[in-house]
Length: 170
Image (tube, rainbow, N blue to C red; front, side, top):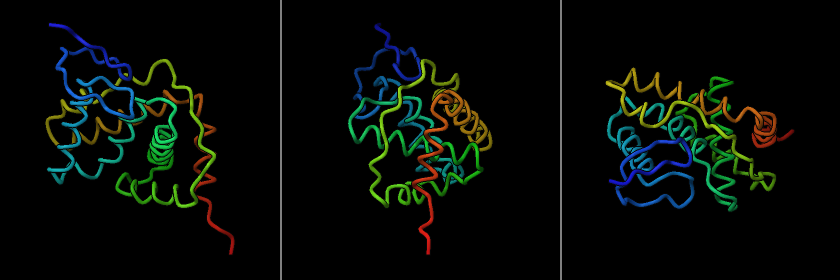
């Protein structure tokens, strides 16, 4: 059986011939594991509170190319990952934060060169969780690992957050 290696996280898995994601740098096999994680958070309430953390960690670990949509998607995920990890923002606020970040139709996002290693923790590690408590712990470990890997771009991402979340003066 032929094996594939995920270009994002390095997962080596038997080739399934499954669908490839359109806008992120993942193998079909890794994308399938991510789908399992999403299904878990959509169907089991105890997993839902870290859903956006899981999404952000996955996308930041599997950056796509340079299309406007890919650049924006990665930027938003890195921006909320920063807020979750550094500022203690609640992942349940992720969708509202993304909406606020895009409210001004920002044109300042640009492609960030991905680091050579995107963290040791992967979707497969989180899937191994035996219960919701372990799922949360592993999701946070994954988010922190991925955030640390983007350290060369932390200043840029923080500037984007400052700009996108600035309150208009009254």
